[in-house]
Length: 299
Image 1 (cartoon, rainbow, N blue to C red):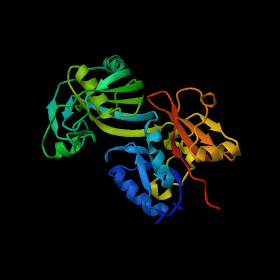
Image 2 (tube, rainbow, N blue to C red):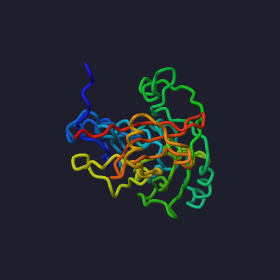
Image 3 (cartoon, one colour):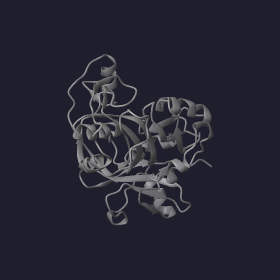
Image 4 (cartoon, rainbow, N blue to C red):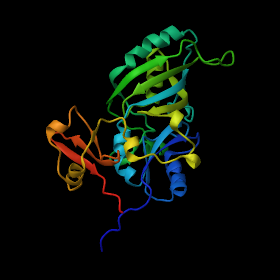
């Protein structure tokens, strides 16, 4: 029996995740809000973090990896002198350091070491798999394993010019904003800055303010979120508008000629009405192939 074509809603929703919710919680709620089980998310946020979470709805679930690959912007606050096993405030304190002599100038100077193409050791509470098990599962079992450094890119890292005001006698807290590539651990940035200052640190606050052009200004609580089109969701990528004949050929699996697509891609292919037809990408061999082709809407 032929599989029934999907006829539910399709697109993306930009959600402002609340503290205490897991990304899976948001997806589960969104399934009821949008009336479909075909909902996924891009770029997990920890329960203690808030901010922008992009959901794929319907056919949008097939395109979430392109959202994952976009730059992300975060605002975070790190507590100097206190290390935790999770690198954030939800963990158990493992070490205390006297860092009362550290100045904001010291933090700003050290932070420059973590801009550009750098390497990070993933925290034990991350979702990376080792020998078939996710690190956070191992951490819950009380197991710590060796993790290899992973390359990430930090495009920008700015430390506020003064410490966050706290109760007298409490540790220094610094706020920083970072714009980074996919796979960057913000809690690791905070901890690494603390270590580079001769002590340690952990995050007490983390908010993602943007994924590509999808900013917190466009986000809503999941109950009030609206669906944007597939094309609008992928608006960070270069686009090419096709004539009607080329649209038909692309939907039949034909590749575009190399001279129609410039740069590195991926490329968003649109019809004359601005609707998404396909996404093409360059593969390792250098050839350009269709990554996702969107079927023509019925009717």
